Length: 139
Image (cartoon, rainbow, N blue to C red; front, side, top):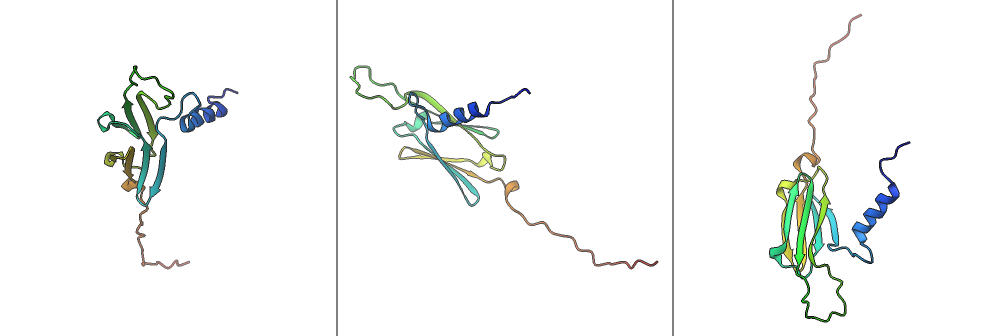
């Protein structure tokens, strides 16, 4: 049987994206939750110049790009673990979110995205038509 995906490789890839590896930690850790009719995502981006942030939406994929300048080469570094250069993260959103109405705010090193639930995905009542004209069946 031909297998298109290897579930263990997919799990390993997902784990690396979420938690990073010892050699390459996650550049943008995220918290995400839903509260009422809105979906929230907060990405940690400490020390990022707000002018370097870029947020793109294509269909249901949100791409966050940021950059942190390279280290001063004249410094004698003891530790250099923070990600440098340009880095990005993509968030795959469900079809039930309104990507046209995303709001973003960057404060205290945290990028907060607020994405409303699409109107078509909200619970709604269906009116039931009632017909009171019963007909008797004659045999």
